Image (cartoon, rainbow, N blue to C red; front, side, top):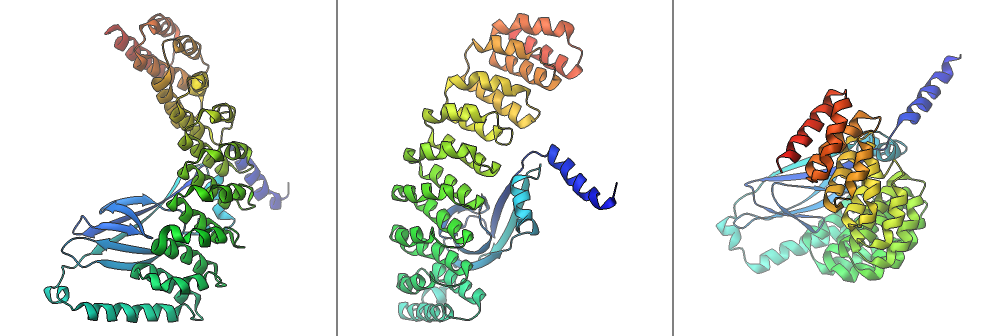
Length: 408
């Protein structure tokens, strides 16, 4: 065999065994002293020290406020790691078998308010702000795209609504990152009044800008954007479809249900997973038969189980029992949790069959669950299985379950 085919064969072999992972993007912010209020891209993220997930890389505006200390306003660049560039980003988000956590940490020292600075005349403060505003507006026309990007975010920090006309003009900037930053700054400055501009960006030629506009609309949670987001469920870009589904789930308008269940058949597993999560948030029994069907999709099984557990429909219990034999521990554990929350004593007969599963991990999970459910009806089945069980891990689980039930 020619050596030049070896890398291809290795890749093909790997594909046969892959299961999906995902990338979690986390920002952690801490201050000295603790207890500062954190506003990240205009959104309240809590009190330091605080950690939260983020969706997009690039420039981020940050404001830290604590009584008795100078307010800190800054712009940070969160650079994407190498695995976030095409085509590696697709593999990291959809193919790589392990979960990846990309955590960025920022630390700031806050300075106490100077009494002299506190007594600074209002006119002087206003002049400083006006100078900063003029500089930012001038920089919006700079030849360097990085300066324009920075100017847009600094306008968000400045908080001056008189910058809005200039930002609206910058929505036509040839640089996608500038247009995307404008979406964020407009939402921060004028809130719901930015809706029409953000909806317009949903048609932007660059998928990154479309995604950023979707993220801002998700923050606003206005139901009038739902039809526009539903249209984007057919977008060619995987991440745009996924972001649209996530936004629809966050907004919570059940008019989106039928469109989301259709996307459970999307060719991309990350989009299908986002659909399952969104359906769980919408919490409507209309989605149950579609989710039950999707439980056969090994790439999104965990998200489907969690969604069904949130909807709390007992018709899903037999399917939870089936997934107790899944190879993944997380899926078995989540199925067990769902059964404990939803099942009644009738589930014992289904679990009895699972006690004889040919996978020892499934037998162990079932024995643990039967002990936790506290149904004494399970005792004879557990004792019968213990007599013929050879696996030491399962034996321990059976003995613990029997002991627990005998104490009732």
